[in-house]
Image 1 (cartoon, rainbow, N blue to C red):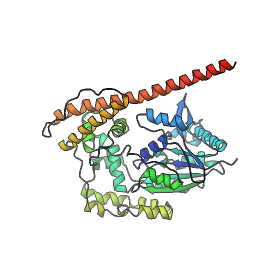
Image 2: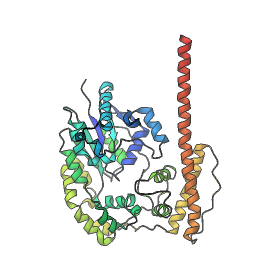
Image 3: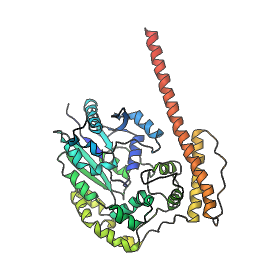
Image 4: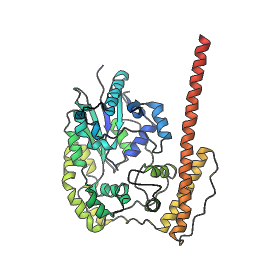
Length: 404
């Protein structure tokens, strides 16, 4: 039997990856209109070896995970094929393709960090003769991406936007990275924009009935960022983002304005610096993909940002703090209802004119209680599912004994 193609979702970071991974984790098995089966593949690690996971196991992982999804690991230096080491990622990918060939399905694999790993894939997984991959990336205009990157990683360094951009050397490089993928013979590249629903866009591209969910790991509201900056136990650095997934899971209707870091006088410079990379990105897109991206004028012009400059972040705005506190209390009620437990008694929402310390005295215990309730819900799911599996195993053994 011929090996089927595979689908690799490679990012980009801050371009809807978590939402797509959450949706695929919740519904990992699909068929298109022709009846072709598609399976989203998660991973588990046992004694240093990575194993592909499917179906109900993937769904259970998502429900018990603080992040709400399962995806593939990032590649590290030791993962490069020329290193000569027995690499667990490459071995796991080989298992995926063996399973797909035997069971006749198209595997879907996702990791937003893979966008920068074209060379490693080209020399490793995709070097096998006859192997074919449809590579999917979602992207956003440079100014939007750099702003999102600052609030994801930069703000936790303590630097303002301009200093962070200079010191970190963080640059928009999605075009160059996608050009490397497009240069691989085994690859058909698909590029979508953030102007559409990423989950729905992915489903439509492959003819899958994939339900869109709420935003996951989207930029946090200014008041919530400010709270985390004042109390770093909730978030140590740019990669310690679990608390934001907790908030979005239970406070999905929390719709405060998203933060903006780029000053009006810096907009043109950031746009100009990324122009060559945008041109490279558009050059490797299929004509229909490029045309869809260019429906958004922000790809080629800074004018839309000057016409309607987003509000600067207001990390201590009292109205924002009030909205955050109401959202936390509502989320806490929902989490305790799911856990079938009673919410704790917490301080009431302060007056809008109250000092910041008074606000934090109400917000911190509310967030701590939400984190604890979320953990209780996830642990409860793990406990009862493990008990169900234990009972099923006992039942099968009893049946076997009776037959004997």
